[in-house]
Image (tube, rainbow, N blue to C red; front, side, top):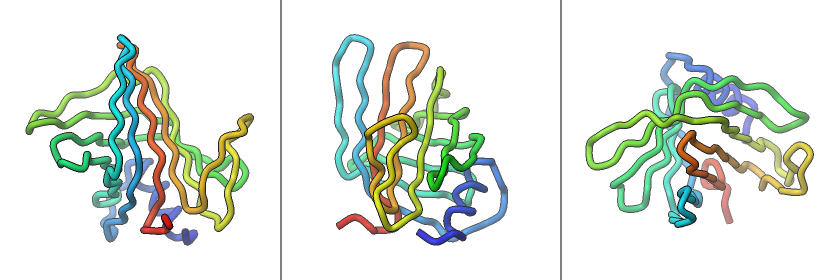
Amino acid sequence: MSRSWTLALAALILGATFTARPASAMGILRVQQRDGSIQVYRNVTIRIVRAKAMVVTSPDHVGALIISNAACSYVGDLLRCLLDDVKLRQHGATKELDVDDGTLYVNETDGELHLPLSSQGVKPHGVVMAYHTEHGTFVSLHGTIDGAAK
């Protein structure tokens, strides 16, 4: 992933308003409800829209997570963004999610990197996100940016 793409992602997460070409990726989204039920969505599309939001869309295009307004900084070579504004859009209705805490990591290198204080790796050109809501829902995302997935 190029340094300019990373800066565009940081601008996206910080809520910048300039226009950029859409970037996309594919990934796996896992949602675990408080009651223990789990839904796994494979082949979700991860898009950056007008450098203002990251949108994760289900393969059937029925649901989407919209992530914006996060604070970003580097931890070593990983870009780390703390999530603030997450919305769920389903069947035409949009709902603000009450995120207790959440983090998005981006690996812009050609090698695998590990999350801070963890053995979990982030693939080259990869995205890892996790957050939980006040209602006890836990959401995680793993994907690869710009078709770098093999």
